[in-house]
Amino acid sequence: MPKHTIVTMPGDGIGRVVMQEAIRVLDAAGFDALYLEGDIGWDCWCREGNALPERTIKLLEQYKVGLFGAITSKPKEEAAAELAPELQGKGYVYASPIVGMRQHFDLDICIRPCHTYKGNPLNFIRRGAQGEIEEPEVDVVIFRQNTEGLYCGVEWSHPEGIVYDALMSHKNFVKNFSRVPKEEIAVSTRIFTRRATERILRAAFEHAAHNGYKSVTLCEKPNVIRETSGMMYNMAKAMQKEYGAIELWNTNIDAQMMWLTKNPEDYGVIVAGNMFGDIVSDGFAGLIGGLGFACSANLGSTIAVFEPTHGSAPKYAGYEVSIVNPIAMIESACMMLDHLKEEALAVKIRKAIAEVILEGKVRTYDMMKMKGDRDVVKNGAASTRQMGDAIIAKVISG
Ligand code: NAI
Ligand code: MG
Image (cartoon, rainbow, N blue to C red; front, side, top):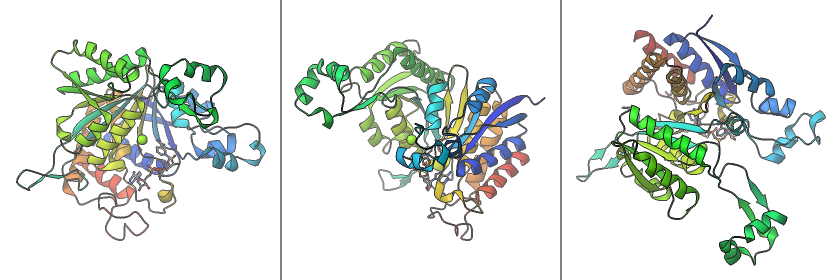
């Protein structure tokens, strides 16, 4: 019997391509696992009216660890039009399976590490005081609350009845919106709970404590969004007292997006709610090479799913020779290895990736700063497979 069972969910488009590379690299590193494929994504929606079938949920319930590629999502009307004819008009409504999965399993802690690989031509650079080029080393881990906040889905257009009455019970609503016709109002709520806020803050501080980071930066906006960001900030201040040596920094999301392009090396662990966590993690990802390098973990109390942050990139999905960068997916697999206490294998793979990047002989089109199309391989870019092969060669040679 293999030591681990992993539910793979390649999904759509390039999700399927990068998943293959991740599994090849895991095999080369000696990861002892059985892979069970779970159906997810666009085909499931079109054929069954459900992009996250119950059988996939059952697999995850049973085996607890998932490796996810990417899925294609489309707006409601387009989705409805692509449903199988026999399902049309039967009340099926498209919902994103990855958002659904996070909510179903309460995968409330999202971790997105962003660290610089030396030699990556996509690394952020800036000019120093003497005009010299500086390449600051980014080593940041973003902890993003994954299930609540602005993405909780509690929203109304044209609020009426008790919803409108509730809004009218707030003096600021009365002052600013009571004269606006109801049909011109749309409301999206931003709900934070103490339990989930405590869990994401705890995860951030624990990570800082165990990995030698000197600060946790709360990246919200407590001076303006007083109830939710304010609660999070107060809880963070109280929690910091348990972690004497680790400083708590408090930055506003807007200012943080400016500072991360000035002094990204100063930050360590960042913690934020759902929306701001999404924004700040994309910002930091841009400093270390973008979507081809951005990996993540979604952790609940019992189930964990690992995925690159990129989507299915449909325009590259049908290439006979795939050109996309598999590193984000392979890094996500490394996060899975850490979670499974197979840290030695994760170290081996990350070292292999670092060596390939530092050598600079094998670079996918994004690393070559090429516009993606079928010709990039002819023009010197590595294919997805060649990048996978280069990493595997380093894994094997140790
Ligand atoms: P995307 O992330 O799929 O692609 C955007 C662009 O980023 C691509 O055109 C490509 O230039 C680049 N890119 C992405 N991954 C790359 C890689 N591994 N290597 C090199 N370059 C890469 O986002 P887009 O185009 O906005 O969405 C496409 C589909 O993916 C949509 O249906 C969207 O809903 C879905 N999506 C799914 C996500 C998920 O499964 N978690 C996340 C984001 C989007
Ligand atoms: Mg995003």
